[in-house]
Length: 103
Image (cartoon, one colour):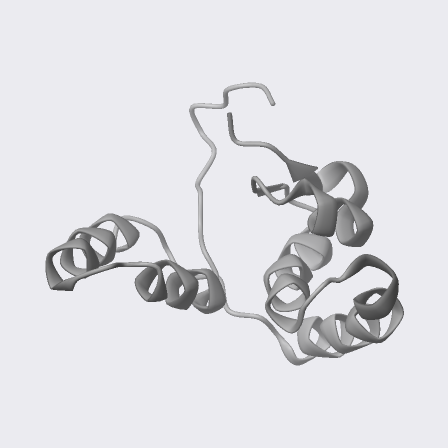
């Protein structure tokens, strides 16, 4: 992925919740919340949710994709913007080349 100084990164509320859920204690949770506060929230639309439901039906059994994967991928698909994830296995089946490793 090329560096782009004018690029604005955002997160969905689902990503926000997963990150908070991953904190192991109150201090970590506070640090994660402060970090996440730097990013604008990108809310899924009804069309995004409908798309996510279709993807879950198609890929849950064959690719082990879960509902959060689909809900996270939906705005990316709708906006045709990349998702940076270490979970390429699930997101590539949903997004193809829009799924990119962050490092």
